[in-house]
Image (cartoon, rainbow, N blue to C red; front, side):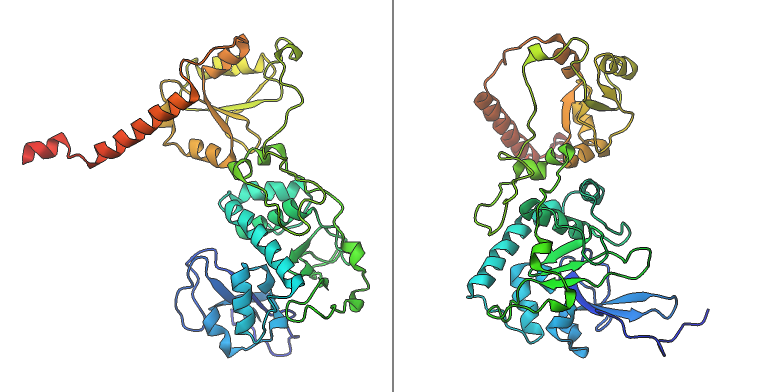
Length: 396
């Protein structure tokens, strides 16, 4: 098939952008060198010679001088880390007035968001998309990256859920710095929504931006709904370990969806409130490898007490069961690592009958004693790895 030409094609809207490279596989169209993983890349949208659509050319930031666009023509520059916002603005002839109070406010907002984004980007993309689904947020599964999903979630957790776009009526708004733009499509159309609303200008913060062309008042874009963080998401290590910042302007006005202490709250923990044969109600179990008791007996025990036994690990699994005799081998399995990433509790199979017996068992050692023993074991393992093996000594 012969390539198509761009002759007589209309101009491309918003042809330029910047973001972070998700891998080191992309090649710069300017110098033909590799674009490093996590480095800033310059994006240029062009008409495809092979299909009726766009192709995106990728460049090093230093190789973008060929096109020399205006800063106002570049999408996504305010969504970068704050130091990179300053860098990109200077690269394209702009100067952010960092000492202005309004700019300082957005700087603290950016730094607070990236504190959470850096932790969220390690979470598998599938689990991030499940959080977007819980908030009915529009996304293109093939095009959205884990970093983009993490940015949307971090923004929602800190500041609340954005309303639907006033132009396309889709929950696809995203805030990049001081700009609120839409990533959705017009109703019953393949045309992208072009809604863009500026809250402030980082280059001229003393001048209020003119949004009269949108026909929308800033109050129509106010956040009035708490971001929905499902129970399984709250159990992820990233949220359980995250310490919410306290000095970010506008953060948590609607509340903290993670909770004050960053963990899931339960209605009741009193054993007397739990009816017989319903001790495991609402809990979903999965297991690794062979188990003791056998898997079919374990499944029967779980289901007979109100629980759900799953054949495979899922996003809504509550506990992963590991055989008491096979704990070390289980740690090397992919299912064990997936459970750790998802924040699923990992327990021994003997935990289930012990839980059902409703007997309080006094620990044989205190927590401090257990920590000391664990520390000694780790130091011994490190020292052992430095010693020569017996076979090596025999050959000497």
